[in-house]
Length: 476
Ligand code: NAD
Image (cartoon, rainbow, N blue to C red):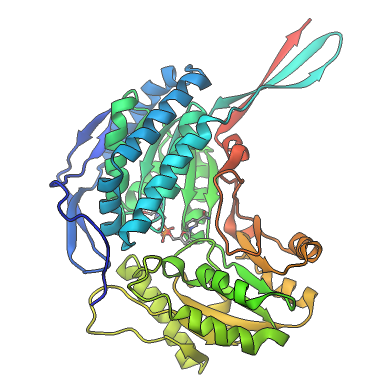
């Protein structure tokens, strides 16, 4: 029975609240999330009501009047205090994170640390005013000012990492933020927000727990001025429609059907472990996971031999591997396996789930040369099921990589960096990783193109999406 996590189950009894105007608030309606390793119910989590949302929006708009006037230096000081607060509570947050996501305790601890790093990174980033025009009569200065109250709506695969980016980007630019975590992983964000109240004025950072209903109300609420969303294309499209009614600014970080391209000169001993990590880390539940692998036909046999051996390392005992985080994604992943079986694709390893086993486990699965038009190649599987295809012509593989839903990332493996640059320039995605599996870096702007979204986060550039530009015309 898998589930070896070095977790500390002796954590104090935990309770979870919506955080409104600086205070914890319980709800008449509570739900429980299912632990994806054990299928046991976890703690009660309150479901926010329409009144809770109205109260949070009022509090945020009150807080915005003074928070927007704070200096960047004052806000940056608070960011360090939040990073310290995250680290001081790392074990309890990682414990909660392990339970709700199914990640191993070491990987959940990494997620908390990365969240703290986000706060420390942005402590050092300032958006300077810029002189846009000057002559003898006028000097025009562009300044970056906050938009107002932001709704941050996040998914379940990396709750701490993805939510902390939105929160820190909002706070450092002088916005107030109300975060709605995924109903599959609400606990760590509610606890993080509760802990952060010790260093923030009331109403600046609030958290409300709920599902699509709450998300709908947030995107329609006239007191919310912008939305940062990470999740699926379908929900992103819905959010844009709703946001149009009150003309909210929107950042959409959506799915990526990312291609990994292995060139004919790749050194397979080095490359295959990286490709496997791209496909199987966190059971493939990563927006930038390698969702399709294109191997030059001259290397295919050797690649497959090594890839199968590498895939075997992703067992439940491996801290980098996890069950699928919730039943919905588990059932969705099984439908991809069923489709491959129905269409007689060659499943080289994996492909079977154990009906008598607790937890939402899918073994690492490799499917050899499924047709280009198959479901597994055309759609994001968000699961440890890797299709491996071959190529021989550069323009052909680029055209196959550039699906409309592949605008988030791609990876390229070749020691020839000029060639890497040439191919990368033809790939239509916001990030291209060369000789490494896809992994965002907090210092680099991260944004989807085409059906993978628009706007973006991370790096200095990400902050511009959280601001308005105000132009000051100084007449001489
Ligand atoms: P999802 O779209 O189902 O849900 C995301 C969030 O939206 C949740 O908080 C959910 O409650 C909320 N929501 C649902 N319906 C809503 C509505 N009508 N209005 C407002 N909010 C609503 O996505 P998910 O299953 O939680 O996340 C997995 C997806 O996210 C994958 O497709 C993955 O590729 C993508 N993702 C993208 C990135 C990125 O940075 N581009 C990062 C991680 C995950």
